[in-house]
Image (cartoon, rainbow, N blue to C red):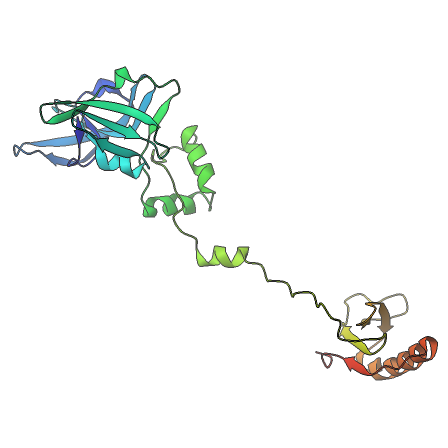
Length: 263
């Protein structure tokens, strides 16, 4: 029977359930004020159809299928005058039920599906992230794979869905946007503008005992020079010698030198 008011999928026939877990889950109250205990849960398998986590209520005379559980599993439940459908998001009919008086009933034995169908409810956000942390931040697709292959003992038979991203995850995946290339260069001739950067001291000195590195880039040609220094206080003297040499060799004047002031 398709029901919109019960708590979960329920059955009173223990023989229909496999992977049964015997545990007391509470009391169910019915419309006639009758109270029955929930004695456990299991998987209901009929032909090619599997419905996970069906409650076993001893003394229940009918199998109850909860409309909300189907909807939580990203399925659509549609009712017509004399028939009802359980469909996936693509509109494919997974289960079909018939109306008798005021109740809609589904016969699982009459399912004509050629491939196995598993109607599994989604885990709540709390459950999903709890098991995500318990399994050392394992990807949700792999958690569902572990469940499918029954590898982890005690893992609830639910569909685990990532409904949000932690801010720390977002920051770790973020990438800094690159600067756009200039359409027009800042300088019009070589040596008009030089960019200079000094790095060091390096932990390991070169053969000649150099621990500082000066990199000089010509803005116009993008040509680079690399100079090595023993210490930072040599910077000014080495730079003067370099500027004199490069202006003499290239017969051009250095107009602007751009640095970060040695920081």
